Length: 295
Image 1: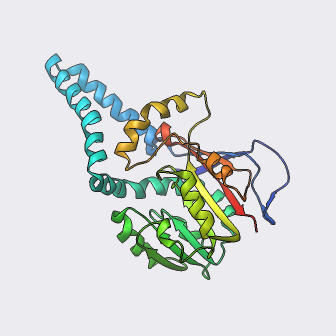
Image 2: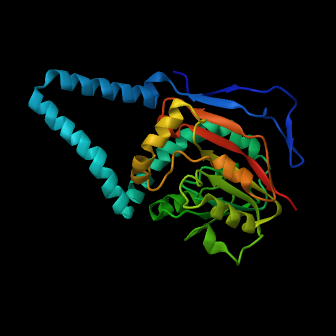
Image 3: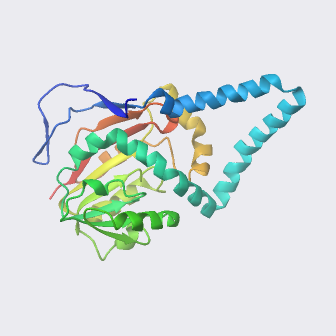
């Protein structure tokens, strides 16, 4: 059985990309499609469950079908209301599901991440650290300050920090709590699926800018909206009000790359586009790249 693999299709040929004085072996505007064996893919499992569900509907009577339909509607309508109202329950559920999801994304984007993070700088801020997936790329001399607003992920982070290749400081609170005491003290800021959840992208990016040293870098890996006019973009818009409630505040239809490019004083490298096949179609597109704060 073959394992997970990356299919990398360059959309533009050329010499290695030079950004911020460093050479990267990435062609501008790449599409990276991660494919998993069919028997392991989320898409396969979804189809199997759908087929099983259709089979049940065919062989049961009208009354039973009505009950099942009522249960389905109840789940789709009531669960989002409960999760959107009872925030601790929503955060707990995300903490239970997040490690598996992040592991898949990490496997699929490992080559791209390793290339972009091959020169981690001394003091690193991991914003929304989640499950600490980026720590494997850190140099032993680096010190990582990790902030994660979901309290149910703290034990996971502390456990992983004890095994990390560098010094990890897991802080309570979030990025705004580091200001003004730690302004202009970080060489690198990591944004891994953060901009989809914050109330204001511009506000959080302004805080990142304040925490960065002049010449400091931002690494971003953010799931984003699909191109305008595509069927997936339409699906994202339609499902967003429901998804934001069941996912502890995740907005699946944001143009996060545009927000990064709007940040004054930053240079943004030509990004890479990553698409996860076999998963949920409204959170399958990622933008990955670097930005630098001009001195």
